[in-house]
Length: 198
Length: 99
Image 1: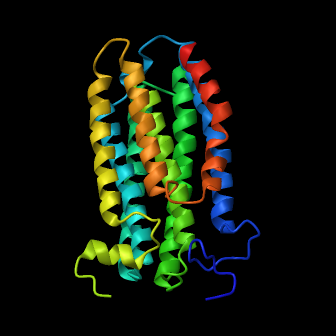
Image 2: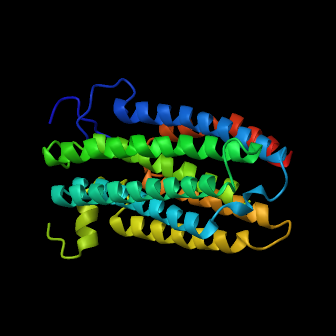
Image 3: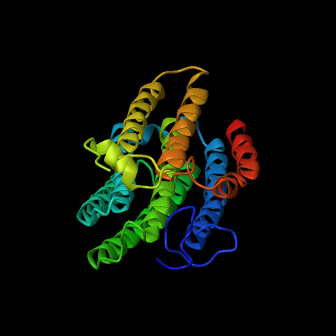
């Protein structure tokens, strides 16, 4: 273990004057900016919805989206379990949980695409048909883009795991990926309530 | 040290400030129950609906932040960094909601 190993976390990490792992600190700073990005988008969506007729979200499929929410929550669980696995030195279990995360994430995105195709092809809700529609596709597509980026990141993490780059003392890249993925889950938890249920 | 109990062995193997797999599973169960409750509440009418739904969503988000993202166990600096924008975000969302 290098001299730079943190006494706080036990991870090998770059030397930091804060005593915190720079990679984790950087990710939390990035997530703070993401909070502001999505807050602005959500506020914009709420404003657009308030200018249209009430009940515009009745065309949305709540049971299907509730299932999709469950899928994303499952993916958060598998990411958390993958971190727990590598902390115990179980590399195979780490890979398996990351594969499951990839599977759940891809399922979520596929269902979202299916929802878009269904709504647009039926003409029930289009990005150009109403302010609610424009706001709906704006917010959910930016979230979907984050899921897509997460899937690429998850694939890279799986490749690194298969190359044996993680150990019980060096798993920060798994944890940092996990922070991003959990944040995407949190955003969806909020969007599900505000867009579909309210 | 011999740990015959898998949970105890897991506790011993990882930093003391991180949750066990059992905790993760309990949080997951809580998230699923709350999601089902949200869907049920969505179909009721009345003034209590919005506060209930927003409250449950906030609890779910906090569960993910505190346990899955380890903020309950990690440096307070991370919590400060993440929650500091809320001073701007909460009034912004609140104003948008009550319009």
